[in-house]
Structure formats: C-alpha cells, structure tokens
Length: 256
Image 1 (tube, one colour):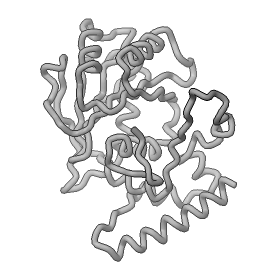
Image 2: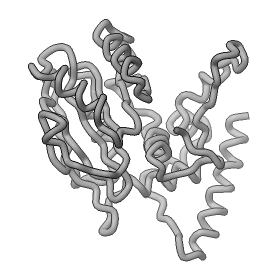
Image 3: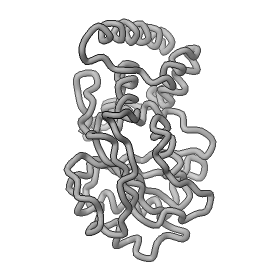
C-alpha cells in the first residue's frame, strides 16, 4: 500500500513539476531531494516518512477528548518546502545574532521556531542538518556538553527565524532558567517549540521539567526524538516547519 501510494505520489510530483515549469512561478527541486526520489520505494518511505509505520498504532476515536490529526504532506509539498531552506540570492539564510536575554534578542516580526533540549542531545547537529541546503551558514557543533551558551538566531529569508537554545542540565548557563523562561513566555512571534529528547535513553527527569514548563505556559510544542546516528525525516521536518510558520499549505489545510 505504501509503495503504491509513493509511486502515485512520484508520478503526481513529476507531472506537477513539468506543469509548474511552464508557468511563471516555477520552483526548483533541490538536488538532494531529487536524489532521494530515485531511491527504491521502501528506502524512500523510510527516509522521507520515517513515522509512517507507527500510524497503524494510532487509534482514532479511542478517546472522545483526543483529536488526532497527522501531518501527511505530499512529495510535492516536501519538494517545495526544501526551496524555503535553500539559500539563493533572493533567499538569504544566515546567522543573525546571539542573545543572553530577551532584551538583547533581535526584534523581528516574522514567525519563529526554537529548538531546546538536554545538553548534548544534538540540537545544533539537527539544525545544521536542516541548513544543509545553505552550506555557507555556520552552525557550531561540539561533542562537548553545554557548548551553546546563548540563544542563537538564524534568519531563513523572509520566511521565519530559527533559534538554537542553550541546553539544560549538565553545564547549562547559570542564567539558563531566567533566559529561557522569559523567552518562552514573552516571545510573541514564537510559533512552535521543538523539545528534543534522546531516542535511545528516552525522556529524562530534566525533559519532564521542560515539558511541564511548556504545558504551564500553554506553548505549542513538539516532542522530537533525535538519534546520534541518523536524521531520517529531515525533509519532512523542513516541510512541517514551513507549514507551521505559514509558508506552506499542505493538503488544503495548515497546521496551527
């Protein structure tokens, strides 16, 4: 079923791409994603839709107060969202500034997303993978816990801002709580907080505290499991970010 759906999606994608190429608003598929589309169906599914196999474990209607809506973009949507993350002359993707407090943060009106998690969980590495289509953007990565000491702001063209937050726990900045709590509570253009957890060791005590903080502040957040080995689904994550920041509508709806 999944393979048949992907083959159908590929046909629609290339047909749509041809049609768009004849119009004024043609988009350029990234070379990286074009190579992904050449993979066999099973490999393509695993790389682009890594959570698809888990969908059968979700039981809609099992709880009347639980409204389930999965994010299910088309391959065309994913190809378009890669364009948002591709650096061009007209789409500048760059490190903007760093701040130790909200008072020093850049005053921006565009939508914003932030990545937070335990020290050395892989936030900066994941962000570097997200920006792989903009190789000139320098995202500092270190195996040493507590490397990120400030809030680092990256501007993605006219679309949105991405913030790499300091890690909590071991070797966290002394003013971490004040810095992060103030940002999360008062940053008006913050659209989503991505809370990264280690997929090997699972949710730890400090992660639970971070979850409670997001719940207390009524923040829209995403629990995102990361692995030190691979970042399967990076294309899907780009698409999700483009969607929640209002830069891409998928399947006729937009995730809020």
